[in-house]
Image 1 (cartoon, helix red, strand yellow):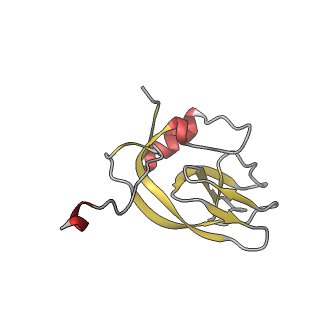
Image 2 (cartoon, rainbow, N blue to C red; image 1 turned 90 degrees about the vertical axis):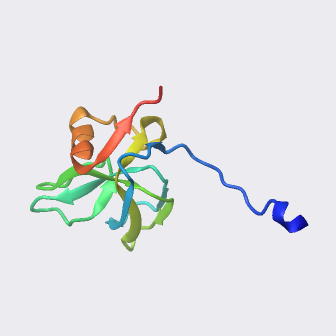
Length: 131
């Protein structure tokens, strides 16, 4: 009977989610290899590459698009991932959900625009400021 009351684990929350509605939906996405290897952190906003020079892969929001490439705010990275310089990485991303703005990251020096927030909202991702 003593084992019924034994602590068997611990769970910590990072505060990424602002609400349970809409329900977070996770899917796989391909992150484009980087010029310099880096660890992309959970909560990184990713943009989808499209246009005539687009490759259908994901990059960190705020990257400079190539000529004839369109980068559209698209998803939130679900876990930390090591992204190298030689191979793309298949990663789990949130396609829908409600997230706290203070817990999200983009490329250093980039400020999230109203148009980017609108792109995310149209896709089912809602960004909320902490109250």
